[in-house]
Image (cartoon, rainbow, N blue to C red; front, side, top):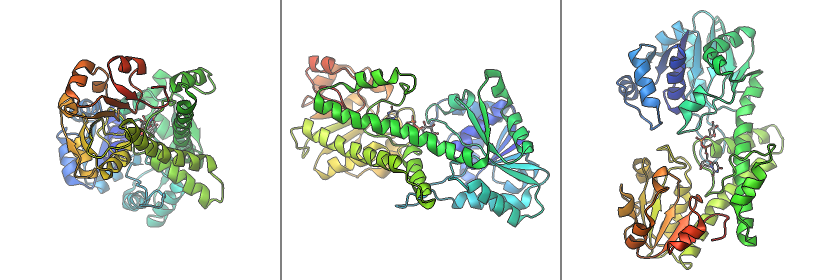
Length: 436
Ligand code: UDX
């Protein structure tokens, strides 16, 4: 099968590499010639565990290629995936679909023979229908169907998620398109991964509903964590007690500084906008978004409180900047909201992150300084704030940490450590939703 992936960003690159691993001939097309050149040389533009090996192997085997010649690639394709970006339009909450529609216009004149054009980007309900309209209008002769195949990949675990998915959702408008997509995903039959075939709109909405529901679980437990702090309960025990009920499930009930990343913040807002457009209420998702913003604000208060209500002139060592471990992605990371507020209040911040420092430098206030050594970061600090639960921070040598610090405040926004252990080590310890 010949597959063309339009867009060699995060989703396009991972999906293209994985489809080639499935055995398809994949051509990833990107407008950025420099990016394409580097990818063709096996150089990854993003950090994703396992991706580099996968790309190199399939490049060597000739199943995976990178290029800029969209016309030639599309004319040979059985399936064309649109995996371009859909950023939130600034301040509006709407997903910006201009890149998706431009891709549809670019593809249309070059379709040759029956082709399935598949939306892979996360796009609001109705986008596939609009892609269909654009292609038909641009090239009335084209023999094609559109389809929607949303991705459910977690950054840092994307390859595994692609290769062993909980499910694959295929929104289709014809049996012919269904056959082509089922053929592409055939290797997954071996592991009996459920393949769910739906109409276009259901597939599109499934992605938003799934992400909004996961975000709901997080905001729910974050709100409960505040109540835990007030009544003296332990959010770990509460989450465990809830999660053991199979109807609730134990995953995504980890209290923390609020969700971030490229999906949850954007997709929750986009779902609210879609509901508004159709005159339907989305009060739950709206509350989820509000609670997430409040949680980040609450973390600033928590840090100030741990430092006797003033952070001015206090040296704060921040461990972890990315929105979660295993990625260099800083998009909507809680650190981007929390640290500027501490800087505004006069804190002297030094930060460490195993992967995110380059991007963080561009996004955080210039007053923040950085170190690539954990213990050098901690040296002389009044407080350590653990912001992202990278494995590198799980085995901290507490005696050394205490000796290096000027103060003894440790604010653990990911509940990595046990309160009693931290107190035994002489820390003034604060965490989220647990007695400290
Ligand atoms: C998410 C979805 O999991 C994935 O299916 C979708 O396609 C894209 O969005 P990702 O953004 O990579 O993936 O990260 P994920 O691991 O889901 O975490 C999202 C955010 O929620 C992170 O900031 C994380 O720290 C936070 N989180 C997650 C919590 O605060 N508590 C939890 O219990 C789980």
